[in-house]
Amino acid sequence: GGSGMSGVIFRTEDGGNSWQRVRDSSRGGSFRSIDFRNRNVGWIVGFNGTDNFDSSRIIHTTDAGVTWEVQQCGVLGGLAAVSFYNSRLGWATGVFPFGSSEQVIKTLNGGIDWFFSGPSISIGGVYDSYNTIESVDSSFVLIGSKSGRSPNIFRTSDGGSVWSRDTVERATFVNSISCTDATHCWACGGSGRIWRYTPSLL
Image 1 (tube, rainbow, N blue to C red):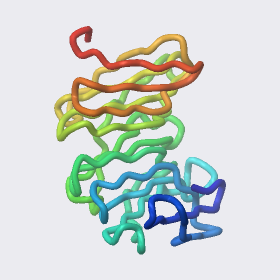
Image 2: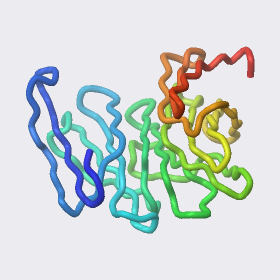
Image 3: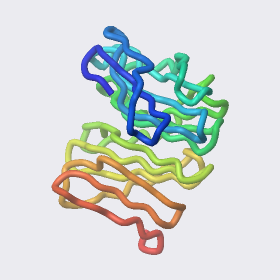
């Protein structure tokens, strides 16, 4: 976690009964999302600074969070969410500089290289701010957003080449998405709303 320019990571080996501080940086930015693919390999993303012109941060561990290394993604702004399908294929998204139309990055080699692979869709000239991302399988990815008018869930079934936009009603944002497989997904967001993904209706 963290706020502003400070970030901290804690680690537990006893199911959460006790925690050890493993990383604390007063000028290293804050952390927003964590994802582990197995016991040892994981990623954390966040913000390096306090505005949209600082570089985004991605850190990576291969020893269960004992040590972390910085990965460069070449993206300004900040990353709010990360989701890996396996130890090599992963996605991250967030709040990039104002006016940016592509806000999703993808890696095929465990975070060594990242490239844009997201929807470039604006609504009334106001771009979506992406809050959460869920990599369901190697091709199916969902993104929850907050936009200038209504929240959206973006969906791809071909690994990011083509995206569809599903508008969800009676809320201000989509804050989190979770799936057990490609046909069973749920999302939650503003106004206390919960949505269930039903592929047969789309």
